[in-house]
Each structure stands twice: as C-alpha cells, then as structure tokens.
Length: 170
Image 1 (tube, rainbow, N blue to C red):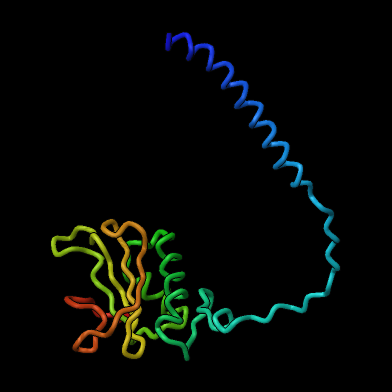
Image 2 (cartoon, one colour; image 1 turned 30 degrees about the horizontal axis):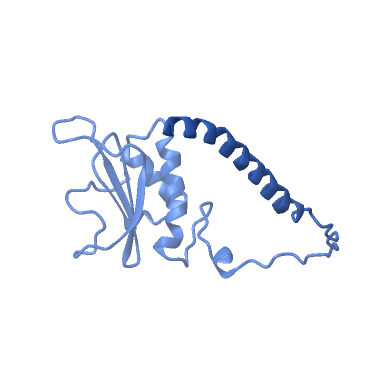
C-alpha cells in the first residue's frame, strides 16, 4: 500500500513543485526589469599624475649612478640576460666586459673561473659589482638554469664573492 501511495504521490508532487517554481519565478522576475539609466556625461580627464613609486621605479635601461644597488639591479639583470643570450654565455670575461661597457666600475668587480680545477667548464659562474656596502651578484651556468641576479651585503673582508676568484687584469 505504501508503494501505491508513493507512485500516485510523486507525479502530483512533481506537478505541484513545477507550478510553485514557475509562480515564484514569475514573481521574482517581474521585479527585475531593468530601469533605464541616464548616459554618463563625458568629462575631460586631466593627464594622470605619476605616483611616487612610478617616478622612482628602477629602470632596466640605464645605470643609476646616484642610486642604490636595488635601483641598479634591473639594469644589471638586463646586461646579464643579454650576455646569457649570446655565444659568450659561458665566459666570465664577457659578463665583466658587458657590465663595464654599461658603466659599472670594473675595479669593483669580481668573477669566478670559467673552468673547474680539472679543466671542465664550470657548473656555474659568479660575478659581482660592489656598490657601496652592497653587491650586485650574478650567477649563470648549467647548474643554475636561467640567469640569476640579486643584491647582497658585502661580506666581512669587503668582498662580494667568497672563495677563489680570478684577477680581472684585462
């Protein structure tokens, strides 16, 4: 008997649910007709004034001699990327020469050896430019994947790179 009731009740309940749903939908949607809104009146906007961060943002296209190491990191990184994209990507001298040609002080630079102690290409090259009490440091090579550049503090003896570096005597 309960089976009979549920079979007769379901179609009636479904119909009632559909009717109630349609009725509610009609009530809800009848109040949703969009009202016309007036068109905005065009006004002449003055030229936007750059914010402080926009006017002092580090540039990647020029050396900022009076700036900080952080200010010069984008430019340093762009030079590193250019050398990395060249045939000389595995030569420390190429990074030193490119940075020097871009205006960085060669006397403030350090670079590691291109070859390991057994004559194999170095897994990574590091090079740096001392900038006040900070250092712009770059690293490239098979062990690093993409070029990496950062700003670090000068280490205890006033150098930027720890360990053995090669003389920049050219």
